[in-house]
Structures are given as structure tokens and as C-alpha cells.
Length: 185
Image: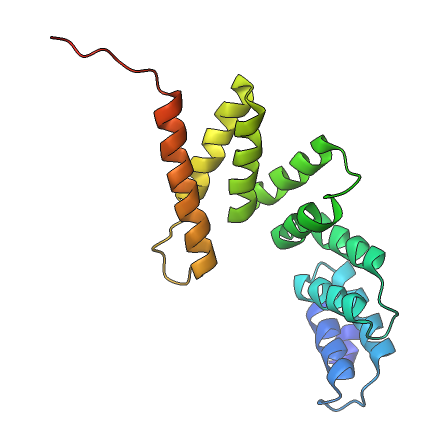
């Protein structure tokens, strides 16, 4: 594993990081070495390593606890297309002192990657903005989220609730936005 890690294989780098972090494998526990190998694997695009680095920075393993570093790490994970990291950035880092368009763009990126909560929240933001183009986009996101398969095997209870909310909001939005058609007598 160490040979493969030194040759740049992210899965091997992550495995080495796990061994150094836990001390359960053939190596003694060493949080600094774990940090090094998780960082290498994360730069190689390994999503699990990004999550491990975030945890280490939140708790202070191998480095002092640092909320700014956590945001930086999540931004790195988001740059590799991690929808959970994008949504985390929106909900934590973008909540204060962030331009509204940046918040919407972060949500939109997570929504495009299939994050159901981001799809629902983006649709809600766009509906409240009220401009015609935004209402159309909001309905599109509600439709996409509502088709997320609440009955699909493996869907979490939380996903099912988000999808049900999207289905309800889509139905209500269509009722409100659809002009009444006079009945012929």
C-alpha cells in the first residue's frame, strides 16, 4: 500500500492515512502522517479523504481546530464536484457576508449534482424572487427533485421527506400559477 501511495494512487493514500490515523493497521498512530496522506489523496480527487480532512480540522486532529480551514477544505471538495460539500458551503460558509448571487450559484451547483435538499431550497429561493424566468427555473427544480424516487430502495428517510416536500410545493405552485380555465356550459 505504501508503495502505491507514494506512486500517487489516491485510494492507497487514503488507506495509508486511515492506518496512520487509527493505528490499527501495520503502522503506529501518527496524526501528522495521516493528515499528509489524506491531503495527498484529496488532491487526487478522493471524496472520502476530503471528508476525513474536514473532520480532522473540525475536531483538531493533527492540526488545531480551525473553522476557516474547514470552509477551505469544503471548498476544495466542492471543486471536485462533491454535492454534499457544495450544500455544506451554502448552509455554513455562505450564510453570513456572502453575496446573494454567490449563495444561489452554490446551491445551483449542488442541485445540478443531484443534491435533493439543494434542489428544493434553490426552488424555494427562486419562487420567492418572483421573476418569471426564476419561477420557471424553480418549477423545473421542483419537478427534478420530486422525481428523485421517494419510493426507491436505499433512499433515506430524509431524502424521502425532501422529495415529498418538493412534490407538495410543485403541486401548490402549479395550482397557484395555472390560470383558471372557464368551464363551458
